[in-house]
Amino acid sequence: MKYEAVIGLETHVQVRSASKMFCGCANEFGAEPNTNVCPVCMGYPGVLPVPNQEAILKTVKAGLLTNCRIAKFSKFDRKSYFYPDMPKNYQISQYDLPFCEAGYIHIGGTGFSGEPLPEKDIRLTRIHLEEDVAKLTHFGGVSGVDYNRAGVPLMEVVSEPDMRSADEAYAYLTGLKEIMQYGGIGDCDMEKGQMRCDVNISLRPVGQKEFGVKIELKNLNSFRAVHRAIDYEIWRQAEILDNGGSLRQETRGWNDDQGESYLMRTKESAHDYRYFPDPDLMPVTFTDEDIEKIRATLPELPDAMRRRFVETYAISEYDAQVMTGDRNLAAWFDEAAKSAKTPKLVANWISSELLRLLGEDKIAINECKITPAQLAELTNLISSGAISGKIGKDVFAEMYETGKSPADIVKEKGLSQVSDAGAIAQFVRQAIAENAKQVAEYKAGNPKVLQYFVGQVMKLSKGKANPQLVVGELKKALDA
Image (cartoon, rainbow, N blue to C red; front, side):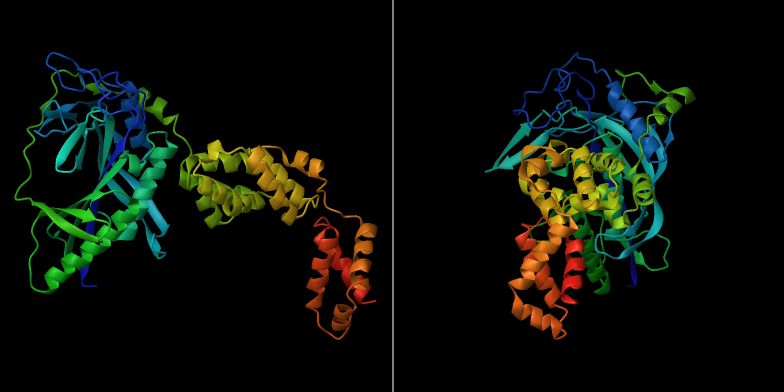
């Protein structure tokens, strides 16, 4: 490829808090439109904002989790613009003195498309805290405004233009989302608008140091859409350059159904937002001791947790990736694995059975009736030979429906595996006596018939016979 893509992301993350950024209105999703509002977040004259301490501390925590330098002196600014989504006609934000600067997020491993990614750090320019704007809805030629979202605490995470492909951007966003969720900063549900992303992308000839013409992509409502939009935009810009055309600075939207970007507006120059310090809000200061107190609360992050799972529980890197895909799932697996004789078996049951059922029922792991201790107990019954894996599936299905312990289910239904050699030998003799033709085939040198007899014995024992002992008794009887 003769062009190199230069990509930077501006990502907004709503901070999880009980109230909005500068007032006491509830910070919740899904309330009736314009019910979580008050004179402060609606911009009535004469009201005064009061900063949300929880949101400020969580922003500093986010900065520490992403290796940022934390400002000991910071302030809020007014960003002036006129649009229906901002009732005050200015947004309280941060300009030259944000809370967090000069961090990074590490990426690597395998990309979204399955190709290996180079290990690298994506630098962060800054993380600043501001208030979110209202939600506009357009339908039938009419626009509606819901101010419930106006004033919700919102972090903006600005990356350096360090990404060179759609895979790298996807990995960066995935890493950022995991950090925010594991740190308890925000839920990052893109469908609810809790995480929103704009992409800045340009092309330059390979080897050139100067950046090309920057084009901004908006209306990206999923990580997959970000990946598709970047790939498309790289192709679109390369086509224009290859045909002798020139690019101009512009903002483009993304139509995910059509898989194309479209022109929204051209940008001749940067907008003048006339920032100035908010006169109603005092500067925010932190001491080294304050910062260290916040640092002491930092959780274990997904990368470190994945390494620990691989080393401690002897599971594969792929399994560790699946187990840490969700913070609640990671904690659930961790608890189950601690009391399991074979943690790998726990991971297998979660991947193959539990996640499938949770997905079908559209419920989260913490809503599941099965507890971590119960799944560990089930796997211990299987690995000890008390029940077979096949019976384990029946037990698991009832556990999922009722929340009963596996031991109680096995006892109630009489499902304990038969491991008595004498009882199994009796089943073997019966199977051989009833299948003379297959005995002759085995004697004639067809070893595949052995599996037929295993099936017959399991049928006679109603699935309770220990399969390993069955094979041994069959070989003993048939080879005699």
